[in-house]
Length: 569
Ligand code: PEP
Ligand code: MG
Image (cartoon, rainbow, N blue to C red):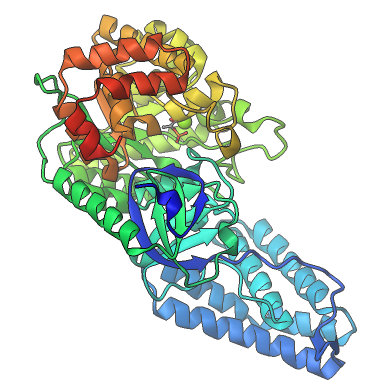
């Protein structure tokens, strides 16, 4: 059945395979700040007393709304909302705004000026206050919107399970979503391997990016979000709903196999999860995953004005390690920079941040960040009696791998690896593997750098495709080096979550696949139904194909027909 014949279909780029139906909840953009815009009553500029009263009421309303919302929320969302409500209630802030307005300054200009002054003071104070600057700006936007009669900006309060739709979402917005009521995420901008899409995947949420027109769907409209096909269908009919129900039943059936991952002839392939927080670890560890292949620790650093202390990091790592007990956990050191900028670490003026001081390269400018992190991990290891593995992102040379391994071992972490996500590292995988115990292919960045294609540019998704022969060649080179060195070669980019591509990766010699936990059952099923020799044949035909589309088509032809049918490929 073609989804295109049903409802009104918007096409985007899907992340993952899941599908849901639910009502739309639009994330309103911040109001455009026009400093001189007058406050109008019945279409004419209001008098001074009315403006004063309206702004005072706007502050009070915003504070009340935030407090109420906080009272109905839980966890981080509750705390963030409560802290933001306190700012909207702040007497000094309000008094200074009103004084400027009484002095004749336009509303927006007055609010913006006072908030800017406070933001500068907060930033200078550092620590907790500096971290509240984003909340302060959100108070400004809410009060301006309230006073000017515009819809409240930001992620709306979700009172029922909803499909969150936004122009774009910062990783921090995504991480702060009230998960109990988020069914799926749809954005107009962003790329399929951008960090918002990845965080959504880790949270197990279907996500579709690059959906032109999504922000025009009215709030409350029922939509079917199908990540496998990248479609958002408004007012889905019963046939589409039935098809999605059938697919959900297949997912449930696949989940009943909880045995360790491996091929039909018994070659083990560890199926492990990508996580970003200790909460992810707690949630995911209850499922059938053999551990964690990628703990993206930068989530702990996002939206902060300074790095978390060693104690704070130790506590988070210890919680994550405890969740997995004796199962393997690969912790990746901070991968800041490019699309994950950190105010205190990355340089704001880099012309090509993806090619700049990001990932492991931060050791050049901020060695203390890496050392604190390694110390915290070693302490968490001692506290929990576990043996985490550690790896560095964005390694380009064997010398970097050697230096990282020395630092990690000196800190007390025994099993050390690096990510292969820069073509130079893939080409020199043999020399790199001589320095470390394992490598993990980050195919998101490997595709970005091999194809010279920004991973955030959804319109270039065809070039960014991990099926691109040049990308597969580099995976092949790395896997061969691993076989030669008898050392593990994992994949932790999004490509590991594609059950068909997973067969190719295993055929190339990859030993573990790390993905969002929700993707594991389909990958496990695909592997279980193909032998090592069949995977090798698929890998050979993918490498021989002239294009990404041909490679995929050739491999799909080799997939057993019943597996094709079950997985809908
Ligand atoms: C990758 O690049 O494939 C990867 C796993 O790292 P990240 O997506 O966090 O950059
Ligand atoms: Mg990467």
